[in-house]
Image 1 (tube, rainbow, N blue to C red):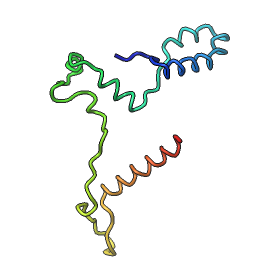
Image 2: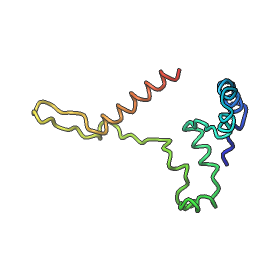
Image 3: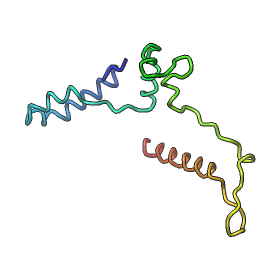
Length: 122
């Protein structure tokens, strides 16, 4: 199911890896044997694609029922967010006003991390 370095993008990555290790291979012949076992960094989209390719027969080997739940369902693609009016407001201990509920704070953290990732990637 998982073909390492398959496709043009992966072949370019593999070639770049081999070019980067060329000096190490010349200095130490054992490195050449280890290069065959080099791992691919898998992005979430690639992981989802690989999980979708798992046949139903293999799902049963993994102790999952393919009719009820497939491995690709373990990756969240959508997160349901309740609208602000139905989120509870938590009163503060000091009695002065209210605080945002834990869900709102956690959702804001997720949004902030995603924004930081988007900036770092671009």
